[in-house]
Length: 96
Image 1 (cartoon, rainbow, N blue to C red):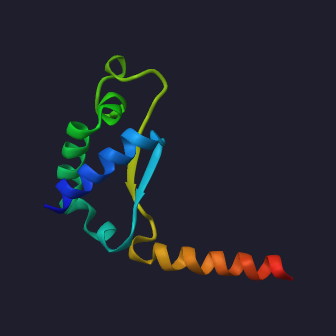
Image 2 (cartoon, rainbow, N blue to C red; image 1 turned 30 degrees about the vertical axis):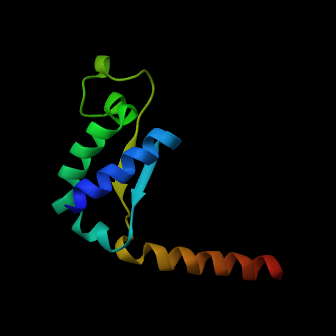
């Protein structure tokens, strides 16, 4: 269920923004192995851009020089709070 919902949401983002990288963070990143297969399946169904740039397809079946990566955050569930701390630290340094 989570994989399907995340795949549907991501397909809208990929179709709208067409960015090369999407990072899944927060608490769901720790369960990546459980929802990723269904998420990628749903993403390929819902996003023509992802389907055409899927790295599992043969190179001659992909769009030229286009790649769309969806990866888990390396910091897992701590990525959001660490990012917020970093923003605060940069602000503090800028004010000096």
